[in-house]
Image (cartoon, rainbow, N blue to C red):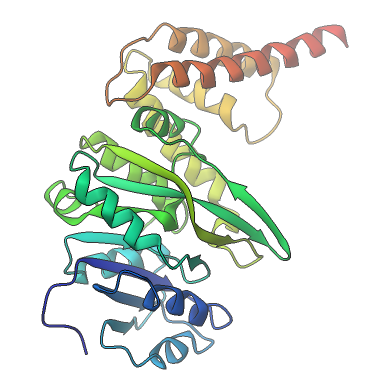
Length: 307
């Protein structure tokens, strides 16, 4: 049963075959210091009883929705967002742990910083017994610039966003992207005028394991499609062939030929001429990313010449 009163924040958690982890993830939300919330678990046709485990929590703030077929993480998350009723939407994954004060800290910030539309935080990467800090860019311009790299913008299961912004702009998770839909979502938000921020403090335990969605073998292909769109937005003077040559330097599917490397250098040099900021992205950071790729190509070509 769901509250009749509108909660302050809706937490959306897709789950697929997470019987070993979903209970701890759910508990970490229900035990938040901020209690004015609803938790929407979208079970994506799990085969291992994940939904039954989630349903064992007898909490009126929680709803479990069982999908009749496996639609993928992005589609499941989008369904949950359409069901959410609160003015704030929080992202959560079924294999991570939100620290007890996560939502309280993030909502305090959003309620006093009306200009921020999407707010992230740092996290701790947990791989078996190892715990490593994940410290990502903090300010809007740096975050947006890192979208060209695709990885390194915001840690997705730490994000809280304003419902009114994403709905009024028609921003949704792309169902066809079973992985990397988060970066696609950020690019949509950036193009719609969103302002980003990262609190810069760890508020989540981010668990790495063989079952992570990010281990999808098609992930590189999907990242390339996101990078293609970002490159087009950041470098509008580049032609289509130049865009393809540029993004190939960021994530080649294999060793670049000398000709491909030369085309990549030409595209990078053209991109370096662009000094305008179109969406608030830090052009200094964009230039740094481009220069790093250029330097790597030059070194590779020098090795070829010396061979």
